[in-house]
Image (cartoon, rainbow, N blue to C red; front, side, top):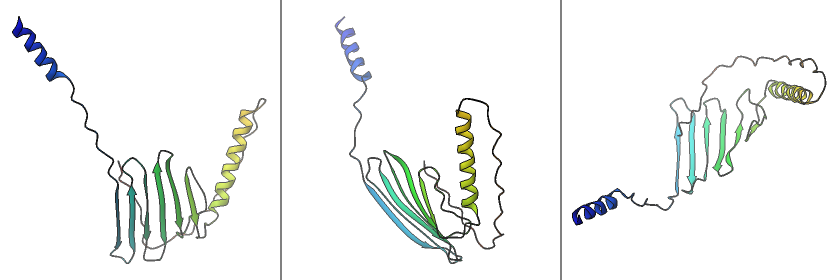
Length: 160
C-alpha cells in the first residue's frame, strides 16, 4: 500500500505542469539602404520595444525619380501610416488609418473619390431615415489616367 501511495505522489509530481518561463522583452532595431540594378533604390528602418510597439519607415525610388516613403507605427492603438509620394496617379486621399500626401498630378482621382464618398454618405443617411427611399445617386464618370511607361515597383509585405 505504501508503494502505491508513493507511486501516486511521484506520478502527480511528474504530471503537474511546469511553470512557464517568462522572458523580458527584447528591443530591436535594423536598417538598410540598397541600390537596385536599374538605378532605383530601396531603404528601410524599423525599431521595436519588444513589448509590441513597432515604428519604422521604408522608401522606394525608381529610376524616373518617383518615390514613396511610408512611415508607420503599430502599437496598442493599431496600425497607422503616413505615405508621402510623387508617383503619378496618386492623390491626397486618406483611407482608414493612413494619411497620404501626394505631390503628383492625380489625374482627377481625388474629385471622383470625393464625389463617390459624398454620394455614398447621402445614400446611407437617406436610407437610415424614415420614409420612402430616394433613387440611387448617379455615379460620377471616371476618367482613365494616361498610359504610363517605365518600371513600376510593387511593395509586398510578408509579415506574419
